[in-house]
Image 1 (cartoon, rainbow, N blue to C red):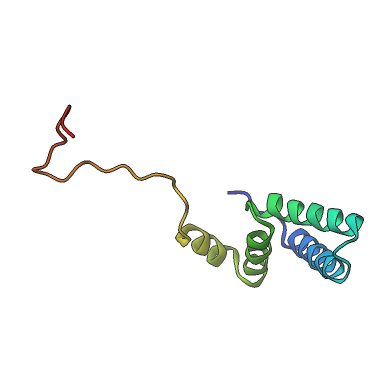
Image 2: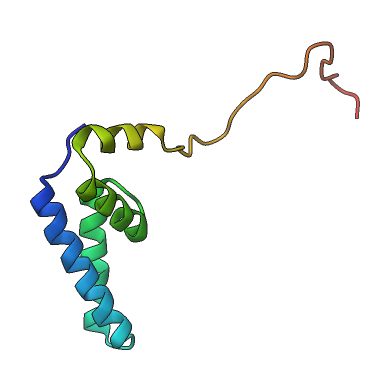
Length: 99
């Protein structure tokens, strides 16, 4: 797994937080909102997350931990693996054609 440089993560996190404050101060300003969303997207790409809030949280964890600790935390986090398929219980078979 490739991880970004901590200096770059810190820079992007500061940028995201600054634009977040600006957006909260002027929510109707489209230019501010667009720049805030761009900074969130950049943080998502940098941290490998789908949501800016998750990316910001991951960036904060990454910055305050050692590399080994961060990797252990990431591997321990639950992942949405999609649908889990299971066989029917033993002794019970679905009957074709009967409802």
